[in-house]
Length: 599
Image (cartoon, rainbow, N blue to C red; front, top):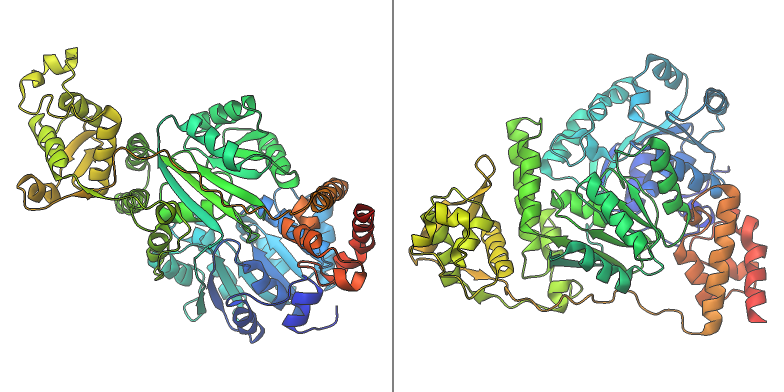
């Protein structure tokens, strides 16, 4: 390949008209031989930042990636635009490894994707030493940090690359990293002097919606009927059992839903993931074992059926929707039981006590995000240190909840927690408040308390909502070591004494409005016919080449074709994502489809 400018490669190879955000600056940093630390949101175009310098600098780029699926997809996408790339992982055959090594030695391979474990072997290290490396890219760099949400111990050994190749520019990339994680990335990857690029974390095309759980499966079904018909999406659940249950439920309701969790066989996980990547309208129901590195750009929704563990995790998981920049939906359904279960999982885990405290703090921040009455995007971006103004495009902006003075109700709840000795769970306290005379309450003689029955004006569901908001405001804590008992905090004293008022969200909420986020862009029957014809052609091509459909063309490219209806190769070359290689391979076929639809 002749040496082109970054702008020429962007247009001629990838089919894009202009760089986004800091892409151009990052590319120039690497071309000048300097190191870079890049924080860029999911779908922000991180891969372009090292792929273009790899095509310009002499030698082969080494890309460290944690997941096989990610490597395979990236390599397929690069080959589709005429770039020589390969990956080495546990599934690579001996013959394939020899062929890759030959290409690298002959200097015909431009990018090699490798799992971090592979780099640690002496044999592979010697192999790399025999090559000229153009750059080293470390993707999903947050995996290096124990304070991150996806720690991988082998990442901490990658400083060996800095020692072995001190003169080769290195770039670390991630979509999420707080202050501690960034410090770990610099330390463990030898990037103390790297130039830092932090792009906006905002994903303006994603509509954020959070609802209170009340029969989660039924609520999920209602959401999918509104937003998930004939759409690709991901549903995250907390446990493997719940994944299986929800996937079966959705199948019974007519959705093409597939489960994915670590308890399944490798073959079945691979089969389900492949269908999700290669076919349209598949809903994958998964634990968080699924998703990191999933490059599918046309995921139209991500639904969380349980409370995520952290804002970082939620941001990265929800960010898998709408990578193509088209409208997408993040839907989260949560309840008090989710909070209790997650706290138990943290406390019963094998992590050190200090890490458990960090995880509990992250969980508290996630709960506060859910209980917001103000703009969700403002809070989300503020968590990553970015200032913004209300977006007008989240559930709270579209339908602002009006807070009310709940001080008296909160005093009743706090008093009851105190009267029962701070030894009982939320369910028990609520039964006392509502005057339920069951055997347990009678045996404890709590029917004689002054707080017995003083809360009959609220339903059990409303009291649970109030309790959850009190936990979020740190007026109550949950003792996981003692029956999940509700306990008072230092902050609760001022409320009990009447020295502080408490404002909360309404307990009787209107039925959540599933605000539509997708515009009707197909204007005529002729456009609809061309759209379906192009999608069918793309599906056949993808199956023929055994690659995901979006590797042939993403939805955004097909949409541009439908809207512009180019009649010549020259006009087709102006379509988004139409690089020279794809134009030569598919141009005449696409023009034929357009011509047929015009008849």
